[in-house]
Image (cartoon, rainbow, N blue to C red; front, side, top):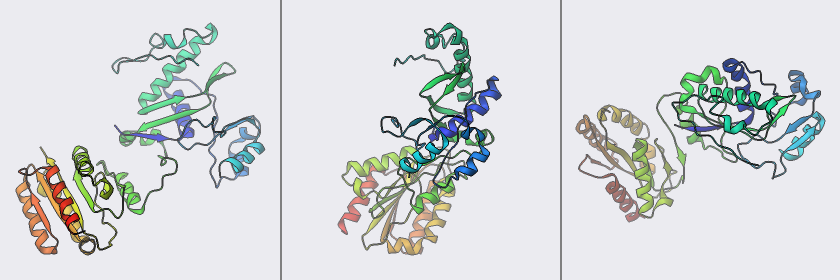
Length: 351
């Protein structure tokens, strides 16, 4: 399961909308998101409540301890909020364990509300049950309300943090509406990472790509999350983590700078995947990048086992001859860790 953080504003919006749909609870909470290009006059025309009530303002950037950092302001009017944004943005814990097969009930959450005043106990209990229903229905993987209070006797989360299971987007895209998965604070995607990310959003497959060192000598195109970890860990264990170009599944061409490089293409022994069929796509991509492979002085190492792997490996050998690019091909007689060492020895010998 992939856990993707979402903005507090989106957490509140999803909770308010679907708490009413699923539990009949009308959550009296209002929130609005302000960005660098927000026009406060236009925003107020859409959200009339902003000009008639006291407000709380804080950054919505996926990090905590905002109050301790002086980034939260309370009891402001809209003009003060605008000024704060301009200047600043440019307890006892109780736990209940709920087995996955058991529903959330008032009895289950009784330890959480036992010490509350009697007149609000049922209201808070119903709210907790309703929130948990939203949590399950929308495939949240994490949902936090802090601080939490009552306004006119009704539950009111002042702060929220949420994470959604993005692998459930195929069945929740209507309920999530236009949800945004922002990058961690301070992160910027490279053009290649942005391209892979856009591909990942359009397929049920998992395509992840993170550049570690664009001038690294060791690059991988690995089938399977487990195999990718083995390759990356092996390169690190051999003392060349700093030369690892990227992590996870995809292919990239390093910046040409006359240094020799190695590209590892492989995985374990698959049970069901037709190796020859998957290699067809890889072969097409390598042909399209022939000039860049040669400019980067790339030496390819291929390892794969499984259905039709002999045919797939034979195609890779022919490709090496066609492109004039060195390609060493191995079946299940070789090991993933073994070809990592061969690749490192190859590029270091040419250094």
